[in-house]
Length: 386
Ligand code: SF4
Ligand code: SF4
Image (cartoon, rainbow, N blue to C red; front, side, top):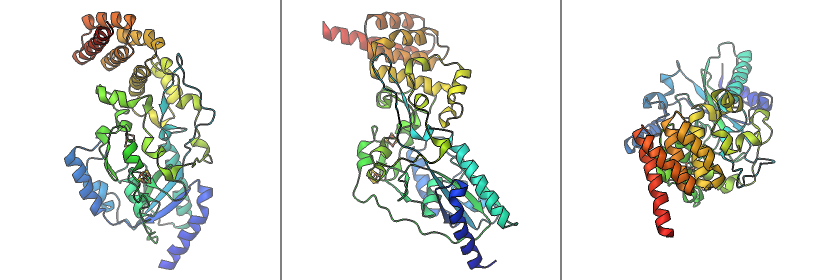
């Protein structure tokens, strides 16, 4: 089939995008991502990886290792909402946490897979010899590198892909194909002199333009399961899952909110939940409430730990009984130790008595050390007052 045949096919495909539920589509060549490979090596050497990535850097950067004779990569973008309508209020006695926008609505992996399956069916109907391999986020390829090459958006200083049409509020997916579709031209970087995202990052995780130290990124830390450092717990604030700060401050995103994808619209009470009831959610209740959200991929423990942290950061004394119950009864050392930290932040006689008792009985070394530190903090504060 000729070049003009594929150009026509691409033009028809672009016309069909609304019927496929896809907001933007671009084509990248399937050449190896050579520069990216160097960048990924450097990140690994510097210890900037999250550990959630595909470990094989050759697979991440060479499409030919993933697909027999790839001819192009189709990159797709689906826009998601950034504003919460009728957001419930967080107030003393009823403080709330927040899920990042990437966890609003139905799990985007599911939504993007649905769009890629529709796209595959559309192409298969027209080209019988069509073959494809689709990926979303957890695939080997780097979604953002593919999207950048495919002209979906520019690779921004905050490590997002920013599309001129939808800002960075887009989910990305891609499809390796055996079709030589004509490639798009990458979009020129439009960040210019702006550094708002780097300046606003609460932890300095954006170590340079487009360079992320995932180990310091709140978004990554909220998804871990273990103990969190004192510094990071303070920075987490009331974030239960993810962090949107470097996207929220971006001037390109200002005023942009996408409400046309029905599956991605948020339930305000799910994405801004009351914190105290989070502490006692059973596995079944967690699955019922969060099972369809991307925030559930690591189970309930990280979200519950982050809810405990958020209560400590709010310093709301009304949360003390609920935190003491976690300190005494939760079977997970991470939850007990973190509850100790939160009680130390809130302070007061009741918290101090519970911490003293817990320090005597706690069997887990790390949890006990956190509890002892919290107790020390309360005592030091009392000394200062006297
Ligand atoms: S997600 Fe949050 S912590 Fe991570 S780089 Fe952006 S602002 Fe910084
Ligand atoms: S905040 Fe500024 S520097 Fe950061 S991504 Fe947006 S435009 Fe680029």
